[in-house]
Image (cartoon, rainbow, N blue to C red):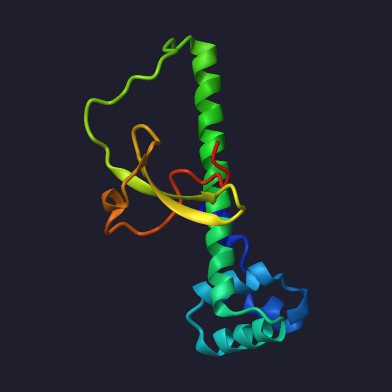
Length: 149
């Protein structure tokens, strides 16, 4: 994942040569990763020229990271399925864990098309009281799909 996100940045030379040729995504990722204050100012000015705020950059990076993580997870599951199908891993059933795994936040579109946050039991995926997610950051890494089924 680090390689995928690192390849989405830009160098100072490429930026200085033609700032408008650099994608907004690359500008945002570079702004978030560089320690060069002058370069940060130049990146910020270009983003401002494009009417992109720092908050929008952070949101864009977060969504891209989630998409990258989901792609990696899908690839890992696909590889595991391929290995099992080749080696007859067996199984076929879901064994419910006999210990409490906790709860985590999930964000998805409700029936009105609005994004909502709910607290879900990790083991079952069932909605649980919000108190079970108290103190946890509202991130949606565990169930990244935005449509509840």
